[in-house]
Structures are given as C-alpha cells and as structure tokens.
Image (tube, rainbow, N blue to C red; front, side, top):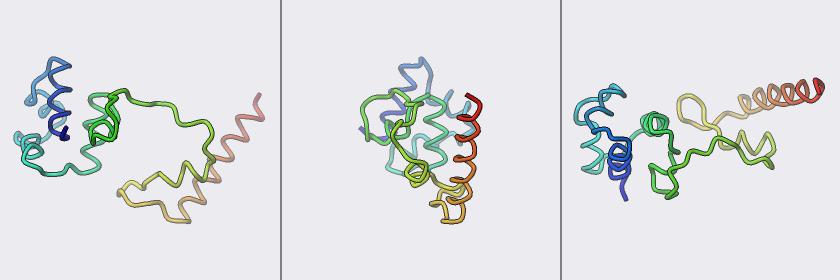
Length: 117
C-alpha cells in the first residue's frame, strides 16, 4: 500500500475528505494527489501528516501495518543509543558536538529526577 493509499484510508476512517485534510494542514489543493502519482513526501510533511492522524511515520511509509502511534520509547536504550536515531531540525543526523551536549542535558535531567526521589 502506498503512502497516498494509507492517507486515503485514514481520511475515510476518520470521516474526512482529502480536501478537508489538505485544508486543515494548509497544503496545496493537489498535494495529496501528487503523492498518488508517485511523488515522495518530505520528512517534515510525513511527520505533520502522522501527527494529524495520530499514527506513526512508519505506518505511513508501510514499515508497519499497525496505525497505532507508539508514545513510549523502549526502556532498555542508553542515552547514546536513543540519540543515535535523533535528527537535527534540518533533517540531518546530529553532529558529535550536538550529541555530547544533549547527552549532558539528558544525564543531568535523569540525575536530578533520581535525586528528587
């Protein structure tokens, strides 16, 4: 199933039309139909659409058949492992410097949280 077909099914299941979703998201009138003809959506648009329907990007891409949005991260990841999959705001992997800064922030947060117990 294509991204467009999944979006079409989601709109139908939510009793909406493609036009309503297009208007709600502020996309051009023909945006979703360009996906139907094979255009690939940007990462930002995929995330916006996934958030709109409260599904995962993986569902939209067909990596999973479950539309359920997973809100909990796996409990056994280290901070470094979790950050390895994080992208910067421009869609590129984090730099080593960014990763070090974020690791320090997260570790300080966890320490503070544990100390408060």
